[in-house]
Image 1 (tube, helix red, strand yellow):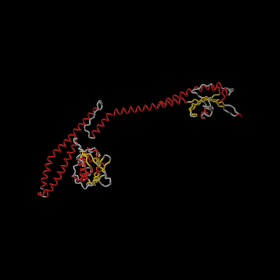
Image 2: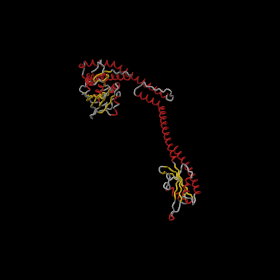
Image 3: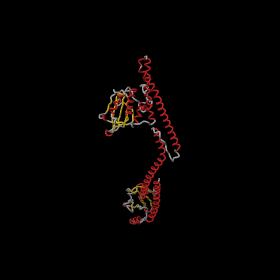
Image 4: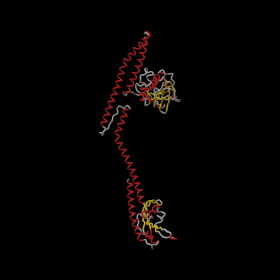
Length: 459
């Protein structure tokens, strides 16, 4: 807008001034030009005209040529800069040469050899002449170019300053909300000690108080639930041991019982074992809820360890496959917890997947992958996160041995692996056959040079 207003103002002033001077010069030429005026006289008349902005005056005089035909003569004060009639636009010349209402003074703006001109023509009565002034507009164009560059620079600086100021103001305004978002994410990820601090911000103080009260109540509720589960598990442990001891006494004399009593004793023993496993899993889960889980790191060979765990859990018929060169691969991990992870995955395959078909070990950089494949129907994609929750068996749990598992096996796997800094996932089998592939990733691969000399736990 500034550029447009400035351009229009400069052009209007130039046109007004140029027209006034051109009309005044045309009137003066009309007085000085007579029938007796020679070419030298015409040249002198043009050379003495005072013009605006170094304009070039041009004069056309009609005369009689040989044979009586009309032959107009053209005179220009500076033919090099603006020659006549070559540099006069045909439309302007026709208007100036016309008679009656179609003719009269006229003006046009156009370029001559890359130079912009305002050309003003005025017909004069003496000797049927036409007076023209070609006013250059170079100075105005230079001024407008400088103005455009200045406005462009100022606009760029202003825009950059506006963006910077807006970004700073936005960060200033949204910074408290970012703290709220970060605190909410930390709380959602399990950091129950997270609290929101907004000192000096009275607008967010009610929100911070409500958030902190919510976090405190949530932490207390979860701690109460965790203590309740732990207390219940501990309280169940003693009578359970008594009942199991009594069942063992009865089992030792099972041959003295009638067949019906023996069947009942077998069912009782089976359910008591499942009950014992459930109580043990609940105690393990409660340790995580009360942040009592501790890693006791040992250094051991992963291949031999997995083979032994499979044998100890009566899965010695399952092949353990590993990459060449992994016989000496050593990991730093908690033996008890890692053994529980592998055992739970093997039991899960037995309960819900028709039994494990293989255990595969792979090493990728500093990550060890332990994969257990089964031959069941697999796990639908929408349930692959759900099954690692507590007491979750998925949609196939009821059909695939729902009475044999506790629903805590995979939850314990996820907790043990998370405590090691790894992760667990479930995929389809890569060979395209029916079944699931549970993969545990542990960032526990170490070099032999990192193993302490006094290590007694190396296998």
